[in-house]
Amino acid sequence: MSNLKGKVAIVTGASKGIGAGIAKALAEAGASVVVNYATSQAGADKVVAEIVSAGGQGIAVQGDVTRQADVVRLFDETIKAFGAPTILVNNAGVFAFQPIEEVTEEIFHYHYNSNVLGTVLAIQQAIKHFPAQGGSIINVSSVAGLNPAVNSAIYSSTKAAVDCLTIALSRELGARNIRVNAVLPGHTITEGTTALGIEQTRFASETPIGARFGKPEDIARTVLFLASDDSSWLTGERICSSGGWR
Image (tube, rainbow, N blue to C red; front, side):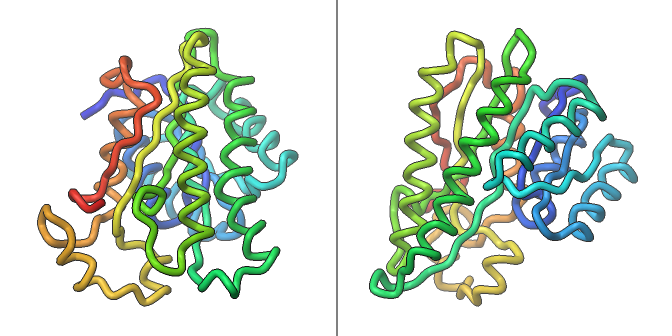
């Protein structure tokens, strides 16, 4: 397992689903983890309790990543508790699907503010507070940015934007020893996909490996690799964690 002892990680949107799985995996690998949440304090507290009961270190910090003041406070609270962060996982995001003629200004900005602006605001703070030796930024994107589904034009385009940010910022920040990579989950079982009523059997049949939906821990393993020194020569990469589905 990747050794993250002495590392400090912030995971946005970590009160449930993929974010929760990532936060727990980072803590298990030895990192001190800040579990960010926007609204679900109970969920974040549960994740922290699981981290602590397993012998790890974690705290929950509320903050809406679409608000700069909240993001500044998130990093301030991190430094107060554990010191300067060395790992940022931009997991917070939203998704909803509708035909293009039903897209409103509110729907558009809801997606772009959460999925793109939130990522930018968090990265701005990370590069301000990372130590001199640099750090690792992992953006949680989606295979939807490569292969959009019907009725997903707005959501999928936000993930394509995150992919582009990943490549552009890897080039911009490389001289500062800051690596920027992305993980692209495929069909993954989370509270969100379950609530949408996504039909798992059909999508699972399209997945070459195992013919199953992914699990948060599947995504977390890829994030662990990118957060660790095992991937010290990787930046600007987009790794599909999708069981082979594209």
